[in-house]
Length: 105
Image (tube, rainbow, N blue to C red):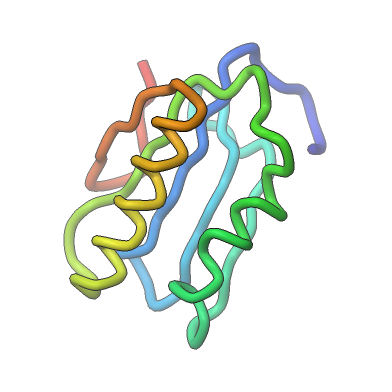
C-alpha cells in the first residue's frame, strides 16, 4: 500500500456503478489507499479471489466493509453483498451499504 494510512481502514466494493468491479482500501476521510479494477467479463467469477489477492491476510486495521447498492445486475449485487457479509462475519467487522462514494464518518 502506498501513501500515508489512517488507523481506520475500510474495504470499499462497487459492483454497480459501471460494467467493471471496483475494490479499494480507503481511510476514514474517503481517501484511496490502494485500489483495483476488475474488468468486465469475469468480474463476478473473480470477486472472491481478487479480494483475497488484493487484501492478503485481513488487515488488523480494517474497520468495516462498504458496499455500493443500487442499479446494476441483480445477480452481481447479490454476489457482492453475500461476499461482503461473509467476510465481515469471518473478520468480526461491520458492513454498510451506500449509493455513492462513502462518507465513513
